[in-house]
Length: 254
Image (cartoon, rainbow, N blue to C red; front, side):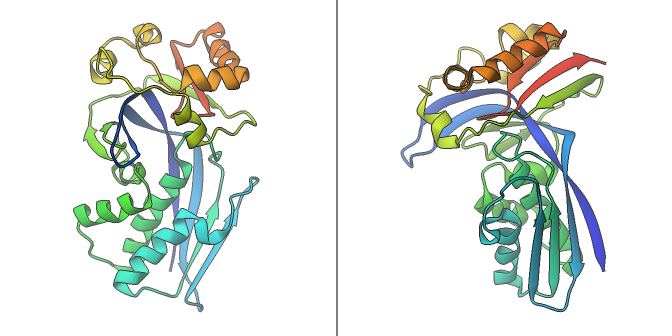
């Protein structure tokens, strides 16, 4: 038995760092929007060994035991005793890009293993497994435009449709660590909620929809600011860095 899943990435439409929490994390406000500009291919199939994992990628994705697909398997194996499965990941979503590729892979691993083994896991319980893997992993279980607060794990589905627009993404050969991105941000409560801003026409977002990471990250990596400006020079209605970077996207009229 074998099945292949296509794991898509996401972009962040606006990102506000609202406050630092007592646990050391930050409360934020953003909107996750799914896009298939980049996708990974995840194949789950039966095998003779207890568990096997292969990752094919042009990037160094680190040791297998740190991969979120492996961690997702181990979470379910611990509680349900599953075994005899091979996971093959063909990695095309750039890493260190703010596109959520690892989180998408983790979510689709959970979904795929549930289907492969016929695990009857309630949606709320599956969300809890996803949360153990990363704060934005639950988003990819539903994979619909969502307003995210808290650590990015409190999700509210929103009726946002950009299907009449074209989304392009560039990921330069620059790595921005999450720690580096947060170190340059001073948390503040925004004057206007991202939800309010997104109710306005896309062409108005340029002046009001901001990613709080951009100021400090662009100062360290000016090429990212140049990429954003290049989108506007080409006629983009809106352009921004996604998440903590370093991917930059543009939204165009089709």
